[in-house]
Length: 117
Image (cartoon, rainbow, N blue to C red; front, side):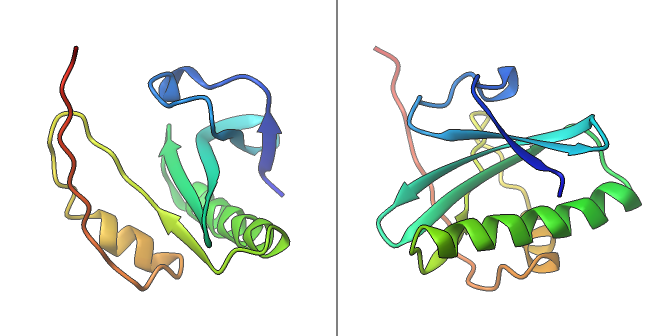
């Protein structure tokens, strides 16, 4: 298993609110990503940031997704909802293809606007 829960918010997710659980994705101690999960009604919300990519990380992520699915079942959730946020207003056309590799089949688009005060 390459997922471990960590107590401190990863720097890469410093802009996230504190309501998430923080996960470290690793391969024999070598960290290749971080994730955040939160319960949202019937869903387990998932955010993933990968720090590197390659064949081994791709295989590891498949195991990570299985861990997330089991955690969602344990919590009584019906779905895992992967969310990608870009504060630069960028649309990532590769997201849906990436998500499909790991079994995400219900595709939706969410757009938000924010205002600094």
